[in-house]
Image (cartoon, rainbow, N blue to C red; front, side):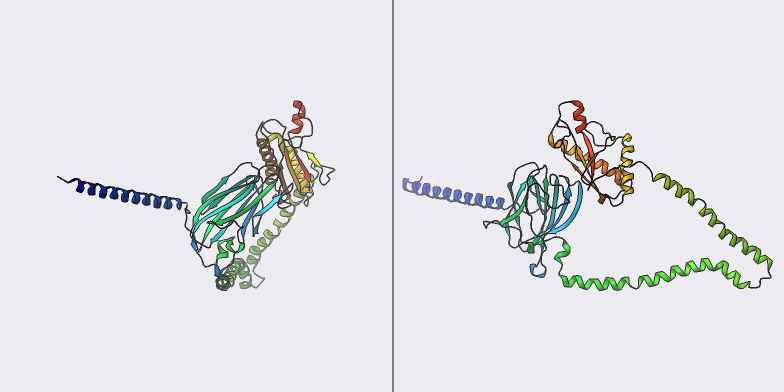
Length: 409
């Protein structure tokens, strides 16, 4: 049996042990929480890189007409992502109301830790780091700062992709920045952003490869070119060789054999020349096909005889006559460029109407391209019900508002 004093000591020791165990458990929980807080690491590791060996040039920027990358217009390098536009696009070639941009590059992280990516967007934005979606706000909104965090390893370059969408005619705002740990937010330093993997390679190593490639290419043409010419000459000289061997003109047999050959060579000439005039005549006959007259720059002309099913953008077959008339016009004036615009009435969802009108304008452009018209001569846009030609108070007026137009640029 324990005495009262021994029992008291034992109880005190047990209390201390329990207290120590509780503290240890708390420490373990805190450590686990800290590890968990550092878990948002990139799904794909970065690449080790010495920033002193190359200098960044900025982002590769791809601009499209259409809010969801419908029609690519151009690509350029941009040192920063920062614009706030009202009533105009980032470039005269871009539709100010509906366009999209995709920026890609490799960004250098100076230190290891958590980075906060910030993008102010009006309207939609998506941002990936090492193929992990960090910001996903692909919808209409006013200028708002969206953020996302991810842990990156320092002294490495990481893949970065940003997509922006202008979804309706309004202010277009796009501004990108980032912050490390608790440091203040700042724009991306273009020296730390590389538009392509080639920019990561020092210039000196690029120069070394070019003469080798050139040296490998130079010997190839001289060797192959003569071989081809010799084969052709051998094949063609065979009948000539017979002539040289049988020089005497007294051999009637040789003359008889050779004269039909010369006649065969002469006879195709008139045969080829005879069908030429009919082809030329058919081309002349095709020239006077019906075209659009009285064209003026900026003046819209409605394509009255093109047809779509309700709420569809595919052209119906009976539209070909009107569209061929436009093809003939563009062929007659090869320097002409046009803008094709789609319009709807005011019934239904505004954004769906805009999308439908743009798809219908694109269908017209696709038809013209299929007929041989160069795509750089065409531009298409959709305005939904923004520009009615008649009040939407009767069915006949609504039909007038549902239209596709073109104008000379």
